[in-house]
View 1 (cartoon, rainbow, N blue to C red):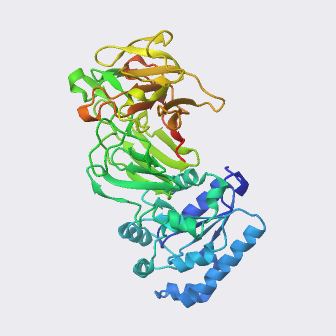
View 2: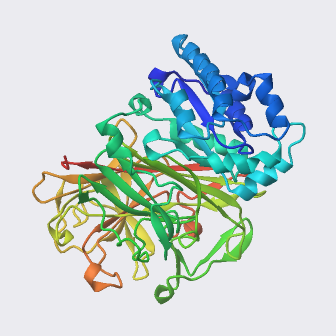
View 3: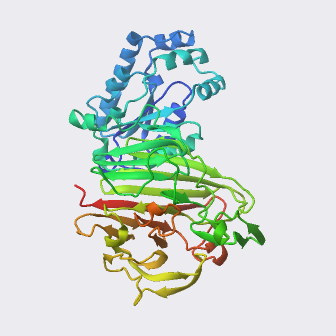
Length: 509
């Protein structure tokens, strides 16, 4: 059982809204059970006259609904006064209805369950014995006003099992207590642009849909293609050397590397008594590179104005005969951008697994030569001309010792480091700073990270993009881990691997 208090970072109440058939009651009960909180269904507050009217196929009017909403609001006030934490479900189709339940109640989180008309109708048609007939779905959709950005909804897609919906809600609702204070006035104006009506902020292009996250002076863009991080900007300054909006991904920028980072020699490896052959995607060096999900369109699972969760399934295929469910969550926090990748083996046999991600950091220099780099690593991997490890050695006495900040100069880096020195919080931090030392960005390596690859882009296909940013690639395992087994995760059926990293800009105020 999970339990928390408002002071511990959870809201006082959660209000789950959506049209009939969206699964409000199921999700609400599951969420309350997971939290150990009280649960109330708004249907319990309907007078018998309203129930009879709906059962007869007649839509309720505003005059029918207002006493009902007032009764729900009074119950919410009682729960807040008694400091009881609870989950409440209600259709709350119009903005005015939600305002009646949310106004002057800053400790209430709004969760909106979103689904297509076809999915809602099919769900309602399968219900039996409910007083609300499927024929009234059209009337609900006709008056539906989806939550606006200034209501700060946590939006979850319902085309996934209820348990997955609840997991997404729990993941995105765990944040600082201050986030549950509903802003007003100028604060509302600053956040009103954060989430578009359907959660998509740019028209689909070569990278599919995209989602823009906003928190204060921070903004980030996440892509449907590969679940990649496209951009991250703080106070108008770019923190990443990113591809432009609407263009294809180049150089692996921001891509998730699953189920292995970096390279596999010849694409061939042995596992579970079988010899397996991956597609050779780095043809010039005869390697399989950067996994199998970079060019997959990921699915939106949930979103808020400052966070988004995407997911996909990696199905068994030639070269990787294992089944994984994978999700990535991006969140803007007071300290910066936080990323968490979860991979669960949903198959029946153990699965080899590794993960990495490939952002390019930038600090406003024309080239990276003058930028100050810090890498808290005691060892580097020596590689051959195919980028494959041939040995590990200390960084002491080599040009690759960046344990103290120094300019990159003309050094060409495409180097994996390990033996990471970590702080009391368990994180290791790679820092790229402007030559002035007045601003920069820290890329921290958290749970599930054991290696980091640093790349100055000297071999990028587009010569104009070379040495414009520094790719700092958090990795769970080294290159060629499918063959060497070094730090390779072996996920037993049902097991989950967690991988966390983030960006903390400084000096950008």
